[in-house]
Image (cartoon, rainbow, N blue to C red; front, side):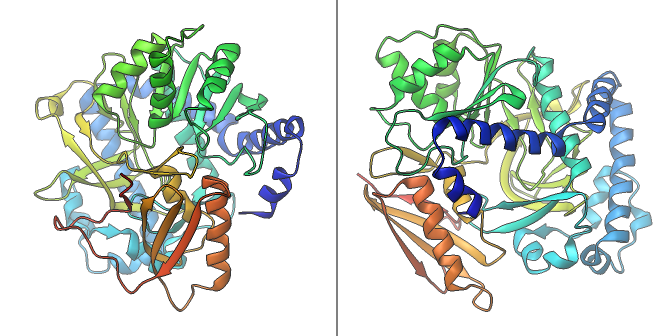
Length: 450
């Protein structure tokens, strides 16, 4: 937990709303401005190109990005030594370059990073339970935000101009707050932020009342959180007193059942998307309900013989990602690969719907669990969170023993209380290795509660 979070937690709610808006103003500087609007126009024009023109532009951006990495990242300079870069004449030739994984980046992060100016730092736990700190150049952040908002504008929602309700992992409700106010308002972008940590059978009615009062034009954020609210509304015969333009789930894989539920309860379409906190390229769902690769943001490949993806992202100049093994999977639509707009993705199989419980019964989803590692430096090699009873969670940690310190364990304890509350016991165990499943896969979350 940061010192700023501690100060926030002691504020009255009305001051916390001002604080949230203040942070929104700070984020506005990093995400918007002239460059943002320039990228919005660029993406609008890119949509009008033919598929061949888009592929040509994608390849040009790929060559420029690889050259940038070689010239500015010591890690990639070493990695590509001896590689015939002149032989890369098509997107398929990207296979000539070696694959990079999270552990390689973590071990070499100082040499991977290209800049520490005009940038922000993002700490990610990820679905593999490994901590990684990446540098995001402000120009890249603006381009990514422009892509996200362009995707939403295709289906009728205009960010900054229309109201949105967001279910995310921000710690907006102090652990010992008594009042049933589980949301805070960010005036900067007309955003009501709802806590995903307090969605219990007892509390959901308050969420529904606030949604009906606020009447958002769109709902976005954690898929399971939105489904829990929609399920409660359906079971109790509660009606949404507003009709959003769309719902935009993030961070978790959609299920067909959940999509049907959300569309039935809120009376609007659900549009899927894929990206990542590291900065992966985008896959977005278009108005015709097909999910397409956004060729202007990077390259997707399949790891040979599998559906696991490798990503090369054009918006990661601070911490370049080239043929990065991100740990997610997608299934291509074989016929859709010849789509006249952009290659079609049949299914996004990453971002599992695993979760843990708080002692009060709230579901803490995989995105929030992985973010327990958010404020740690690159000291956790792998983590697994195991729950056998409602009131206790055990963390198994493989750590970098030369750099992991007692204060890192204390920071993890404090972060756990922010997410699970003070009534859930947290046990940390440092282990030499965490066993994989019989399938060979690694599970970050093992919920064995009956």
